[in-house]
Length: 463
Picture 1: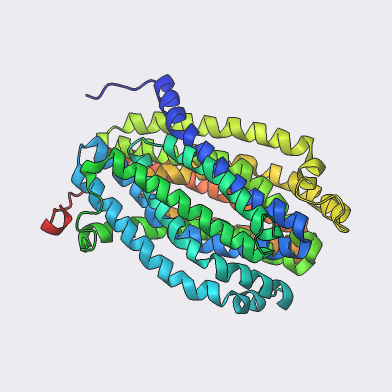
Picture 2: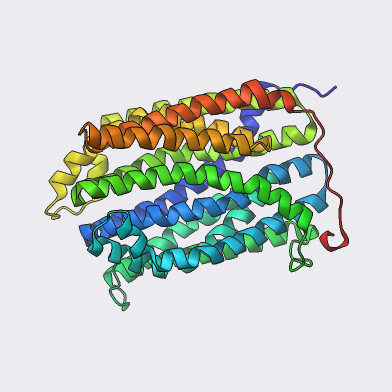
């Protein structure tokens, strides 16, 4: 019988694994905040366009992240079983699937103005957003490969390096933005295109640093040995696990993208305010996401150990930690809404007062959904750790779109509540997701821990 792991040990290990991921996510968020700050100082129309383009690009990116995220629980379970071959095979095929996905995104970014205009955005904003996305499109490659290697290392318990590299990237991105957006230090003034170039350079440097570390620390995994040869069994396994993760994430992220489109229907001021508040809200959510990713790894290890109690205790610790984070972020949002919005706008911006007034109300709405947003992130991550992604995908899609987006449109436009109604609908969708995913985990999937998974046969090309 396995020795019961205490709650204190679970909390200690979750913090040790999760804190660097939180730090890395915060640093990643700082990169996005830097873009928003500098573009807000440069031009409000540019800020509105990049808020729209960023949401569009992020939807595609998160869909592609599913394959890398699938690697994390699989690698963690394989490590618990001391199976280095499966670690190697899973990581390679996650790289394969990510590369294929990058190719599929190129035409969607190149012709984004057509899509955005069809979705009701003004031609001027759509054209400016397309300029940004066409330059940013190559960044999808280093971003998705970085996600795969990060997930591989997280599954092995190596997360501190992710924080170190991402923190360094904040300074690289800030310097590149300063030079290329405004035209300082002898560089041309490129505006939104400069922001896109800076992002591409930054993410390429991040990938190079993380990959160099992984190859140095785990040379015996031989990740690049016969990397050109397909491993169809593992490719299918990673694809079946990763695609629902990507689709569920797409359902959530596209809910927020659709909310940005709806805010665009209300005008430039609501859209700019929405872009700022979305960044502020994401800064809170990113804390939950780091520990949720750690919970995925911990649950995956529990699967490898065939230990139901290990998974259940780890889940309770993750939920309590998420609640504590929500209390802190809600207090922050409620105490200084105008000050938070004002950070993103130049003092001489003609629309500054209007955007601050509108954004302050939206921040209070963002505070309202912090509790359920954190809980649904933790629950879906725990289910990923148990390698359960298909049913959660359906539950998430129903919650985010069947309830969330439907409510946003009805409250925002049919009832005339405007931006407040749009954000109230988001809250309802996240609440539904939190409840349904919790039900799935505690009532159905937890009892399956301990059942031996099917063993995939190895092949010569996979060794």
